[in-house]
Image (cartoon, rainbow, N blue to C red):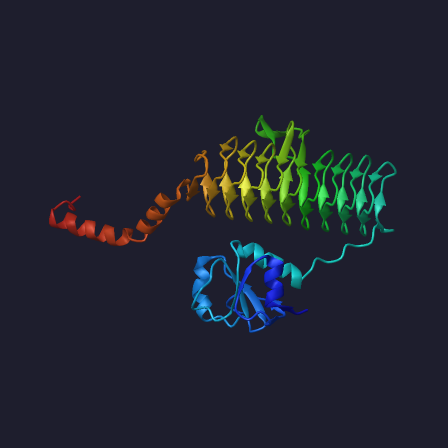
Length: 340
């Protein structure tokens, strides 16, 4: 598949600077792109590669005089890259609707139009599947689950009883929705299991990564609100609410009954304590430990979490501590304060 740079610019809705007829046959990273590739620049940290890239075309935010490649200029280069990538790599065709003969489907399941149920799937009593739902091999849907239209479950996804999944949701391989929350009551040097009788609600346009686990609530519901994107290997505990359009990176964990505000961003391996109410628009650096709400729109990092600039100053100071200690000992020696 070959596009001219003019065709790509039209597809993206961008301004073209340079040869309109140059042929482009692929998409590549800016460091690796060749003369027939289109690449993109969205992160200023990669601007240094513009002078050395061999790419035939670059999608970027503004015209760069020193860039020798054809320039496709758009206010949103990452979105432009997405459009170019989709043009060269269109989505896989959907499987033909139908139920594989190895699937086990209960008698009282409601199945919409255009549904595909793959090999060895199990669908229990009372399940409702919307139109164009796709269940890839070995998916397990427990009783009384509802799944909305155009939702895709990859292989080995498991959804426990009573949970509700919205429209256009994507559950990546091995995601577990509705497992029991971690609730135990201590008694006489033992722990009694607290029944987890709530559910999980996943709203429309959510994507949940591979092997991520979202626990059902003890009472009520755990809720992932519209448009949230959750990476692989994330643990969402019982009774948590993840706000609209919030993104959570891999290996993060959110403790029980915490509410995360809309449009927030959690980096990888973030840990959030239980029973918190985080404001909207919070940005949390990787490996941060969050114990209180920093306030709307705040950027925090470190353990315990601090304002991001304060955390960076502290981290920069730590590397100087050995020299500071040596200097302090010299001063103490001169002042005769080191005798003890």
